[in-house]
Image (cartoon, rainbow, N blue to C red; front, top):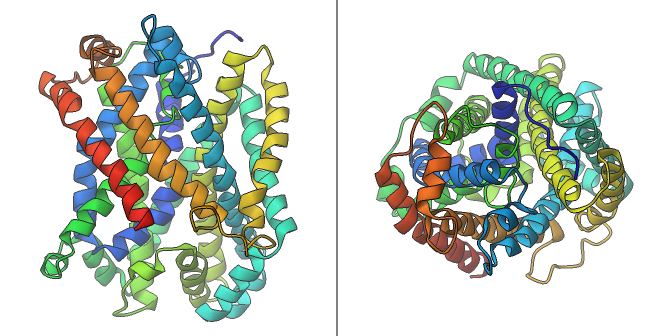
Length: 465
């Protein structure tokens, strides 16, 4: 195995770790599910669950990564006691990272298509605000397998090209620039959104909680949806965060780092809503975002129509910047997960980064085909669980592997059958910064596993029922 690299700066660690968490779930799913589940009330409950669920699990991943100096492929092997079987988690982590990228890179390719459409003034701008025509255009775009293969291949090549350069020269240097550009785009688009005619109405819906959903008897579903979004947005459970813990020293305690990463992730998610809701209420006065719209159609039809309604010049500029924003968010996750995959190979083989990158480019050109062909030539084939390939792969990762992996991380860190609460707390608190209070470690030992297990079971039951 190659000698392990380290981050060149704390900023690099924070931005790359945040980049792993920041993705399409923040800039696409979060605003839509917020609209579908009551606006500000959902946001308030979501933020509460980030505190009680997301940050503790992230602390577990970071602590295991830093203590082992390994990825999930071998971290438990160097930390477990003789006879224990925690090392079997490596299979969950490896499968989870590969399966996530099997559909995520395809969706990132859609962002690339729409970015180019607005940048070049392409066909999408000919349909104005006609959502039916825009829906037909979107369906026609997905119906071109070779176009999707091309855009997916570009995303895969970019991701592994960056990772092949190494941690500091590739992943850290490029991701830092991309993340800073992402934050600049967010601020610029949000400021522009505040000037729209419907900004006040959109911000009221988004930021001022209403008791109306409670009167409608929807509190239970809103709480469950918020808990799920808070859990899945941070990409914890399959070692995607742990790998970056393995690249840092013990100068700073990990609780503060986990809070900072979660804060950056939340900033992007909340800012996406600050962009989308003023735009939506400006061009759809009195309208609502229903649960039935919580799909790709909203992003690629409704929002594309909003941009077109701004006029040929403003619409083209804002549309280009918005899809560039989405593209950067998607690529930040792709590069981070590809670095995790790269680390698997570095630890388990004697190959160098360039060879590993070339092998995995070939693998992903094959592994992404079900998600690509499921949009067109295999559209008539229904997955074994009654969903298309993208939905099926998304379900396995989001509803099974992430919560299951998170549950195992928490149990390993807090129980005497694993690493143990004392050793975990010592690693977590090593260095300058915030220290984990003892009462939180008790919460993580006795309450957090129950919450995660409930979410896991509920997600599976809800999916099938």
